[in-house]
Length: 124
Image (cartoon, rainbow, N blue to C red):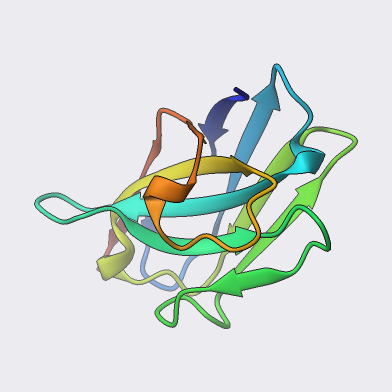
C-alpha cells in the first residue's frame, strides 16, 4: 500500500481558495488513480474528484465542476486539488485516496489507501 498525507486545509471565507496537497510515500503514485473525497458531519463520504493513473484523465462531482482542479506531479509523488470559489457547503474533512491501476472510481470502496484527512472550513 501507499501511505498518504494530506495538507493545506484551513479556514477560508466563502468565495476564497485553498490548495490541498496529498504526499505519497512507500510506492510511486504513477500506478495509482488518485481521488479526493470529503465528509461533512453526519453525512456519508462523497466523491469530489479523481485523476486516472494511465492517462491523467480527470473527473469531478457536479457540485465542484468548474471550481476545483485536480492535478498530479509524479516527480514529487504528490497530488493536488486547487479549490476556488469555495462555498459554505464545502465545509468537510477532505480525504486523499489511491487505487492501484483503478480505471474509474467514484466509490470509496474502490480505493486501497487513504490519508488521515484535512479539515476545510468555509465561513459564510
